[in-house]
Image (cartoon, rainbow, N blue to C red; front, side, top):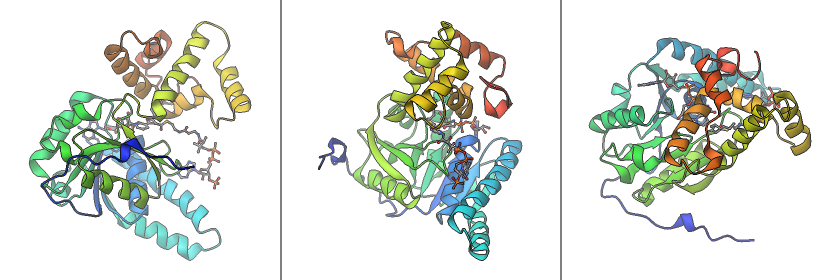
Length: 308
Ligand SMILES: CCCCCCCC(=O)CC(=O)SCCNC(=O)CCNC(=O)[C@H](O)C(C)(C)COP(=O)(O)OP(=O)(O)OC[C@H]1O[C@@H](n2cnc3c(N)ncnc32)[C@H](O)[C@@H]1OP(=O)(O)O
Ligand SMILES: NC(=O)C1=CN([C@@H]2O[C@H](COP(=O)(O)OP(=O)(O)OC[C@H]3O[C@@H](n4cnc5c(N)ncnc54)[C@H](O)[C@@H]3O)[C@@H](O)[C@H]2O)C=CC1
C-alpha cells in the first residue's frame, strides 16, 4: 500500500548553505531527555556537547549515560567483550559536557534544545544562540507540546528551524517525530530526517500541531486515567494493571506519568488548558497539580503516583 505524504511537500529554500550532514551536535538541557539524546548521538559517531546550567545535573547525567551505554553495549556485542569495550570508549570519547554552549556553538551543525517545557526560556536561549552560531547551524526543539513556530520566532533563522521530538528512554525508543513549520526549508527538513536515520531512529513527519502525533493521543489518554481515579472509579494500580494486561501497553498510564515526570505533564497541561480553554480533553487536574506542588514528580524525586 502506498501513501502519498502531504508533508513531503517542498517548502521554502534557503539562501544560506547548510552542511549536507549533521556531525557536530549541541544538546541544551542535560536532564532526562537531553542526556538520552546526547548519549545516542555519541553512540552513533557524532561529536556532541551536552549543556546544562547545573553541574550537579551534568554529573548525575554522566553517570546515567555511562550506565546506559553499558546496557546498550551488552545487547549489541553479546559475546564480544572487546567490541563492547571499544564501543563504550569511542562513544564516551565523542561526548563533552559543559555549563555553557558558547565554544561549541562556533562550529555546531545542530543545536537541539531539551530544557524544561517553558516557552520564555526556550525563546531566550535561541535568541542568544542565534547571535553566536554560524549561518549553517540548524536549530531544533525537543518540546513535547509547545508550538515550534513560536519558539522559532525568537531567532532570525526560521528556515533553519524545526522540531526533533524524541521519546523516553531515548536509547530504547525507536521513534523520532520530525516537525516542520511553514518556513522550514527543504534542506533543513531533509538534514533533520537524515540525522534521525543516522541516530538509528525511525522518523515520522508531522505538522506543528499540539502534541504532534504521539502526545496528541497519549496526553489526553493519561489525563483521562487521572480523572478516572479522581472520580474514584478505580485505583491507579488497577488502571495500570488493566492497561498492561488488557491493552498490551508496556507501562500503565500512572507508571508512565511517573517515568516521564509529573512536572513535565503539568507544564503540558498548563500550556494546553490556557491555549485551548474550550477543549475538555486538555482540562487541568487538581490531583496532578497538588502532587507537583508537593514535589511528587515521579521517579526523579522518588515519589509520584508510586514510591521508588
Ligand atoms: C504519559 C503521557 C505524557 C507524555 C508527556 C511527554 C512525553 C513525551 O514528550 C514523549 C514521551 O517520551 S512519551 C513516553 C514514551 N515512552 C514509553 O511509552 C515507554 C514505555 N515503557 C517501555 O517501553 C518499557 O517499560 C521500558 C523500555 C521503559 C523498560 O522496559 P522493561 O520494563 O522491559 O525493562 P527492562 O527489562 O529494564 O528494559 C528492557 C530493555 O530495554 C533496555 N533499556 C531499558 N532502559 C534503558 C536505558 N535507559 N538505556 C539503555 N537500555 C535500556 C534494557 O537493557 C532491556 O534490554 P534487553 O535486555 O535487551 O531486553
Ligand atoms: N520527560 C519526557 O519523557 C519527555 C520530555 N520531552 C521534552 O524535553 C524537554 C526536557 O524534558 P526533560 O528532559 O524531561 O526535563 P528535565 O527537567 O529532566 O531536564 C531539563 C533540564 O534543563 C536544564 N535547564 C534549565 N534551564 C537551562 C538553561 N538555561 N540552560 C541549560 N539547561 C537548562 C535543567 O537544569 C534540567 O536539567 C521538555 O521540553 C520536555 O517537554 C520530550 C520528550 C519526552
